[in-house]
Image (cartoon, rainbow, N blue to C red):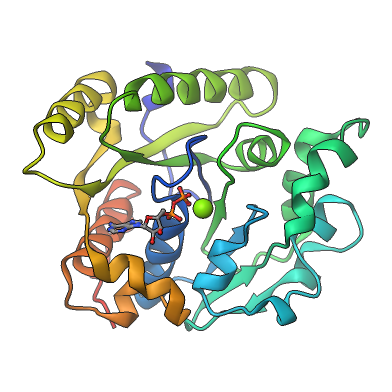
Length: 271
Ligand code: ADP
Ligand code: MG
């Protein structure tokens, strides 16, 4: 598949996407972002999900979300006006609000509705080594904006029945976006999340995904771990909340693997 080519240089803008909800997109965006920030990269996370879980999980309370990704998409604010510091050093965030769920309808007649985020990013100062865009669980205008703006897609995938069907649809969508809007878009990698190696179905799905996408599937798998699910209610990434737990270690390893894949090798450690 042509979309599994290796990137020639480190990627700066990654969309974290999968149209299925509850597969670990937000958890992955937060923890990969935090692990890379801990390694010294300056990271921006753009919350493009009306549910705002990435904003909450990084300690940005609803009262602080004055200028948001919604304002940026509606052309009411520049991206740089929407950036807030998160609870994590070197990790900034553009928060979202629930109003963002109206963007689909509000942008329906906008002639350049697919490329608003790309244009906003192009006009923003070049302050970040990496920009992660946390997508909502759909393939509507919000995810489209992320895919048009991005260089690569990071796909969290839960090993369950129908996972491959969902993945095929996402791959087709990425191919369409590449043809119409963004010729450089590739799948940076698929990460298997909430993995339970004792579960036969999970093992089988993991094998199938690896034979379908080959090297595009990261070696690192994220285990199911209760500490990972507790961390957001404390407004912190799990790599800070409980650095020693299996989930935190796996996210640090995933971030290292992503850097190796991009040719930007540097040691990573949970804080
Ligand atoms: P998405 O953004 O794709 O909807 P989330 O990242 O919000 O998915 O994850 C869905 C739920 O699963 C959340 O409650 C989250 O805390 C939990 N979760 C995610 N990853 C793990 C994991 N590795 N172990 C246990 N729970 C997890
Ligand atoms: Mg989410």
